[in-house]
Length: 146
Image 1 (tube, rainbow, N blue to C red):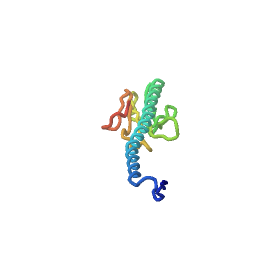
Image 2: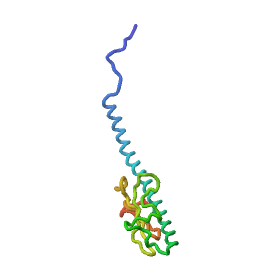
Image 3: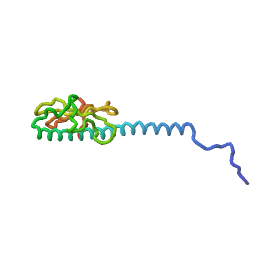
Image 4: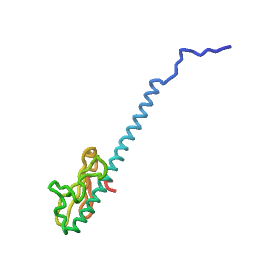
């Protein structure tokens, strides 16, 4: 006895199976994308913090040579060109922070990394470092500095 396959039977995915797959992918994306963005922003913040530390070292060298911090910034509160770059990260073409020297006096200063471009809406906002090494970020935020 021979059995013949039913030619009208088709194989494939049902609409419900396809919708389940779409829902699973959407849930995974909803978790993964914000996590990736925060990781990327954290890396950019670390670059800015490293730049602030480098600028602080340059400020100390400037003080050693001039016995004052005065005149270490230009009229826009940027580090003078011979002192240190005024954007971070120092490498690469895309800059995410402007570096500024504020509250400049003979023996004190405050350094700021002001977010711009893709980091303008970062949760940590402007990060600062004083001549004493004290650091801060946007009020109410934590875990911005290591």
